[in-house]
Image (cartoon, rainbow, N blue to C red; front, side, top):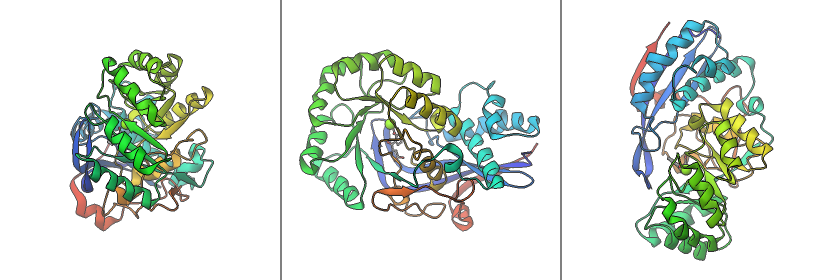
Length: 367
Ligand code: OSB
Ligand code: MG
């Protein structure tokens, strides 16, 4: 499609509850949305970068700047742009996968809406609904934590993930396992440990966790491979996996037995599908991670999570786990699952009045 204009829109949504990780506490979600407009269709992209660079180096204002100054001029100059060409057109700009992924998502959405094809159908979804887990932040005390987990289990979530950090690990894991018995249960450290913590992390082995997610720094692939020799719980990588080739290498090195796929982290849904494919070929199960997305990003994530090698429940929780009011019709859990949208493109669109109310800045860019 030919891009006539691209709207960059910053929105701010309060979270229903603060979300604490080893990286800090989020109370609201600043999100950058991209809307591409062509002669026959428009499409939406959601940039998963946060307001501050705590999860990775990308952040909303940086993504906004790189999209406006460096990505859009390249797409405008290209004339006719297909979603599958976006990554190569943007390749000479180093890094910024979340910014690139948001632009590619918007172009793909426009293209699929025009063709009448859903994200799920395009990506290769094999199921109409996906099993959902929920990511639980660090709590100061065990009784609050158990109350939160109990509420999510009552909602129907099929897997619990606890955020951990040094000082908040073995005891909360023990408390949840003892209280709730035989649930699907895993932990995420967001890179809070070091290679020296291997013996300590092995204390988690007795709790029969599905996996330990990203215990070590993003760039320490070899460290994860070494850790996997001490800890029997499977190691899952999140931050470390930034491409399909990186996933192949990490698997070959023995650094992970499971992979968390986040499309924004790898530069978009097309690369995310390639990560899925290399993991499937290596018989490494994957699951869909989350970045506290709005319903736009959630729609795409749920479609991705319906691919065949997504055999573990994802962090694809219902809208209500994050936001009192989402920007599209909310995703609602049904028997612990979310339905894969079937309409053209993302299959969901922002509600104009809600979108206006949560917007903090908007700008239209043209060729
Ligand atoms: O590491 O998976 C993570 C949230 C923010 C940043 C990083 C992570 C997370 C989550 C929550 O775990 C995922 C979600 O529910 O969207
Ligand atoms: Mg993670």
